[in-house]
Amino acid sequence: MNRGSWCFTATALLVFSLASLSGVYALAARKQTFTGEVGDAMCGRKHMEGETAAACTRACVAHGSKYALVVGDKIYTLQTEDKAALATLEQQAGKNATVTGVLDGDTIEVSAVTSK
Image (cartoon, rainbow, N blue to C red; front, side, top):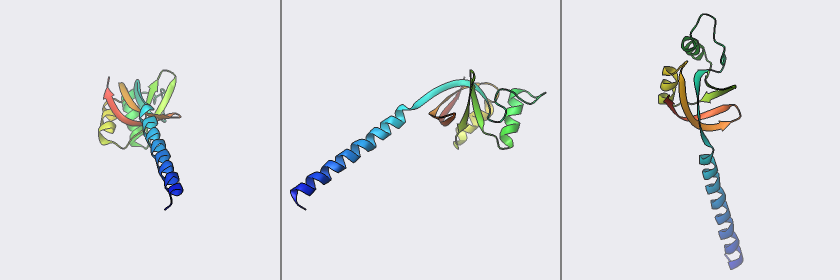
C-alpha cells in the first residue's frame, strides 16, 4: 500500500469512527423523562363506561393494546419488551408513573419506568 492510499484509508477510518461515536452520543442525548397517567393506546384518556381506569387499561392490554402514557393533552404509546418495565406499567395502570426513553413521534421506546 502506498503512502497516499494509507493516508486516505486512515482518514476514512477516523471519519467513520467519529461519525459512529457522534451517533451513540446523539442517541443517548435523546433520552427523555415523562410523567403522566398509565393508560392504553386504544382508549387513551376515555375508558370503558363502568370501568375504572386501571381495570380498563389492564383489559385492553390483555386484548392486545399497548400501554400508553397520558401527559396533559398528549398520549404516548409505550414500546418495551422489558418484563420489569411491563410489570411496573401493569401495577401503575390508572396511576401516575415516570417513564424514561427515546421519543419517536408519538411512541416512547421505554428504558425505565418508576412509580410516582
